Image (tube, rainbow, N blue to C red; front, side):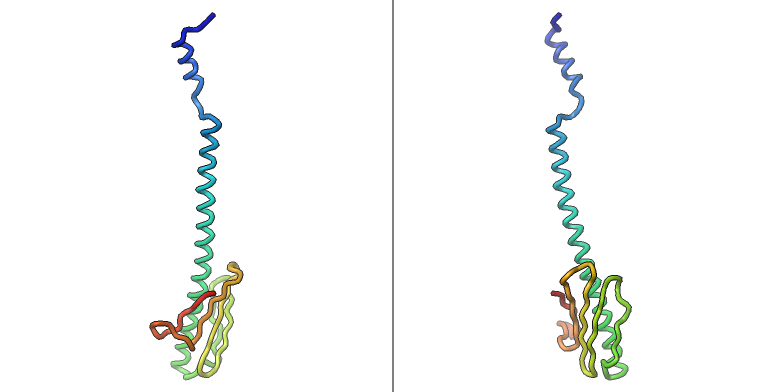
Length: 130
């Protein structure tokens, strides 16, 4: 027995309630591309956060050093203050000048430095990173 054309079309419409495999594949690809972009941006944000932590610790050291020089008229005996988790700092200080470097365990190859010899534009020492 043959169904009328209208009944056949209605039956086909009822049977096609889901998505095709091509439509699903296209959605999965779009989501994967967006996720890869988000992961890359997140990684860059974390790296920038670690660099900011190193710079902040170096600026805190600069404040401590200048405070010590104001009271003792010497940078000698300058010690490493408490740093942010993961930041390692090394200091070299004499009576008239000081310098320091900071590294972070999560940012390989990045070294930030600061010192009393090269003050920034406002006359205070500013950290720089390479």
